[in-house]
Image 1: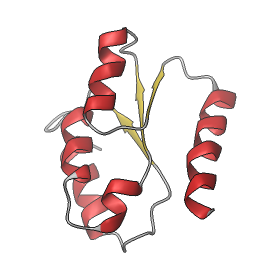
Image 2: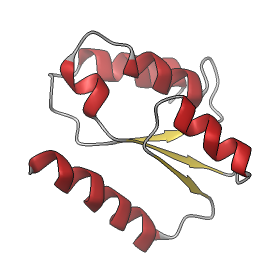
Image 3: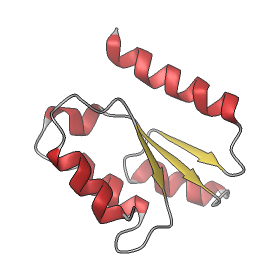
Image 4: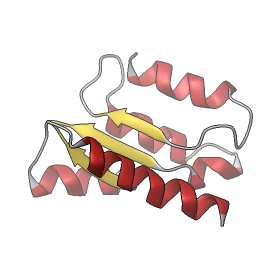
Length: 98
């Protein structure tokens, strides 16, 4: 999937149907930073609420800040620790249901 496809998939999804978005940063057509920013600007309530989690090899502090500036909630680096991913997903998804 490329970044534009991720944006399009979110756009056509029923509002509130997506619990979280796992977003790679390096994708063709539109990178993950651009895609997250476009999603956050959509005119639908869940666009500002859906957790967007970066999954990337970009591990520098400036990379993390770029993700947060683009509207992502979290920045996880590869190789990915599955327990950390599950913990982050639980944190954000459980927050939505409370």
